[in-house]
Image (cartoon, rainbow, N blue to C red; front, side):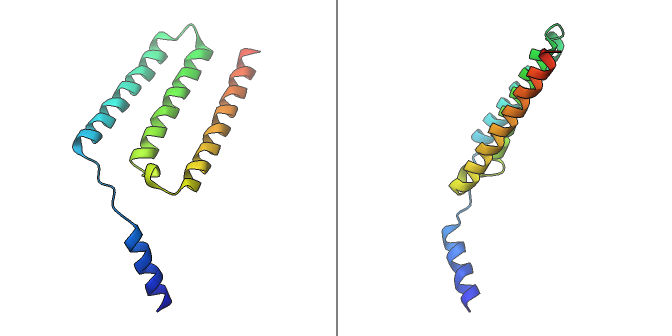
Length: 106
């Protein structure tokens, strides 16, 4: 009986998040532009190997942020999930910077 009450409370607070076609097409166009930027960096950044890798990783981070916030609905989740995602992003950037520094000083 108590489980049923808890389930009813959860379903009352949960609301579906429906995105419009305009938003979805805009997200798709944004992801395609970022993908083209990644390809451009990989083709044109041959001389700057370290910077090309760094730029490609930062672009990929931006794409993952867009996908997580819109398609995984992190935008609508509890704040604790946003904080945990921010911690992961900070650790990822730190790891990326340490890798770039190691590669650049060889």
